Image (cartoon, rainbow, N blue to C red; front, side):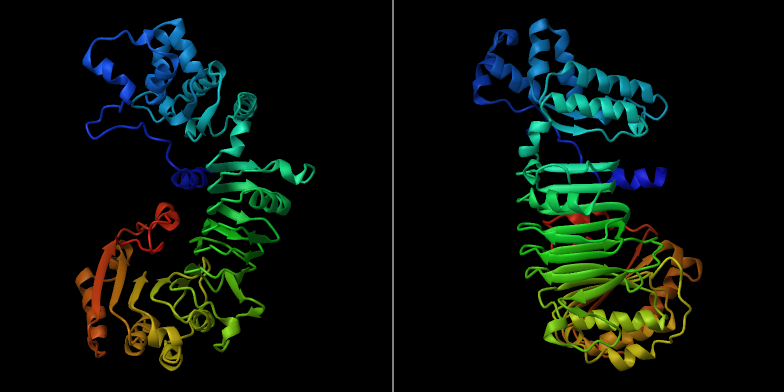
Amino acid sequence: MDLLMDRILRCLPAPPEPITNTTGALPLPAAFEDIQRRRVNISALAEDIQRQIVSKLPMKEAGRTTVLSSGWRYIWRSTPLDLDANSLIPSGDNGSDDPDAVVSRVSQVIGSHEGPFRSVHLNSKAILHQKSKLREWFQALARKGVQDLCTSLVRLYVAVCNFPYTGLRPAADVRFLELLELGLCSVGLCEVDLDRVLAGSPKLEKLAFVCGRVALTRIDLVSPRLRCVLFWHAVPSHQLAVVDAPRLERIILWEDDAYCKTPAKIKIGSAPLLRAIGYLNPTLHVLQIGDELIMAGTSASPTAEVPSVNILAIDFQFGAAKEERMVLSFLTCFPRIQILHVKNGGSLFKTFVDSDGTLWKKKIDPIKSVKSTIEKIVLYGFCGGDSELSFFKSILKSANKLKEICIVFSDDVFSTGTEADMDEKWRRAAASVELANVTLQIFRVHKHYTWNYKTASDLLLSDPFDCLT
């Protein structure tokens, strides 16, 4: 449970920061110029100006204005509030030793404030197991106007609960007209709930499933503005289908310790702007493009290609012939790859190693993207095995447009050899191939390298898999 919550908490967006100028002072509107020039009784200011003052203060400081007078108590209670449970933890304490103090303070804030609440962050570890209190708070927040914010809500993350069943309500009741980002973190829900949330969120750009196996028989993406869908430490149970997503740019699939008896189908239908997908894993995913199911040995054809994709990430076990054959088929499906990320990981339960890498020498050269479009390759978790070296040399020989190749080692690799030995092995392998204008870089990172949810979900970054910049 602690690991689950740690993963979820790392994915939650940060609460809004107080707005400050470059000197660290709170910025004041032009109406406050008289206050800056001369001494003014702020209690005599108009209420709208007093509310602006309170709204620009951090939550604790805003609450302290209530001791000034009954008038300031009224101002605080009626000013829209950003509630962050973590800001109520006593200084110097992580809240774990005295959860009652945090719970009491949250109850006091919710009980005394009239609403509305602009944002609510109940993500402190101190309140994770306070089910009765959470229910009480949600009911109070609904009464005080948070429910009305559904029409203006921009970002919503829900964690470790069951999503309210919407099947008995009119579809028009499920509306998030301004919602841009939705995170479902270890949440139980039905297919009809997800369908209605997507249909009622016409501006949704980012949809994230965080932690666990998403127990839906289907996830159909029909969304006019959706740009990014993520499965972070999560896998679809059965099928993720991109039915109609005209602005979808990236599909992020990340699960490094999944136990999966039956792989999930990733079906790509209408997604003309899709440019990044990964990590595709042959033990976790079955790829379907349109009506074409991609199998080992699938030949290149227009009906089994996604030409818009230029960044591909794949995760598989080198030396496992079955997985290597599927990876060759994955590469065939994306004929215009410019950046290729390859992770030597595979499934939690390793397949018997039955390949020495001969397959790469025979099969990688004809692949269109390898010969004509790949400019950068990033390799993770490579240890210098026969199949890895064969892949490395084969792709160097075949990739005519290649400009840069990066090899990323983690600390645990060096238990079997020194850093200098590993560096020398790969540089010697590169030197055995005639390279023109190709830069080889070798990086050493911590075992739990720095790729994270923020990078993967940041739509301003051109490469969502880049953990080196």
